[in-house]
Image 1 (tube, rainbow, N blue to C red):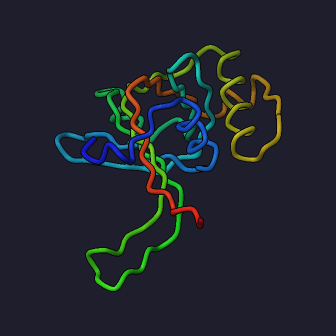
Image 2 (image 1 turned 180 degrees about the vertical axis):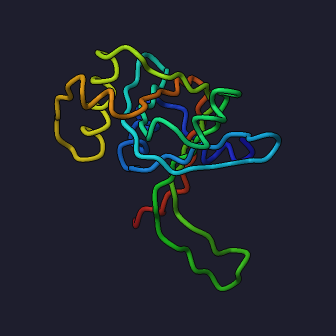
Length: 160
């Protein structure tokens, strides 16, 4: 990372960003062309590894791409506040963001699918929902396991 002064290295700092974000942008390559989609997600952190849980319809472009190439990059960012300065080059934006890399893994085990959907609801709606086999089998559930994470934050200066 070029701006080491904005780099976030602690797992807690990265989890703080994740907790503020509700949308994950997942990028992939489709026959040499970039393709990115916004998805709702749930997650868990084990040691320093992030596991994102996502779901979608059982068919579509992203599913076709991942069956050929499961490698992805993902991004989350938290809205901040504009910084207005006297000159445009000194202006900017306060923000927090996370970028990671991993491979999409389709989840077939019904127990893991139900757990993934419950974690997704916990993160998105802040409530625990228990899913059953019929509900879990009505969607495609997948995960991205990533230990390749970079967090970045431009903080608003504290008033002294």
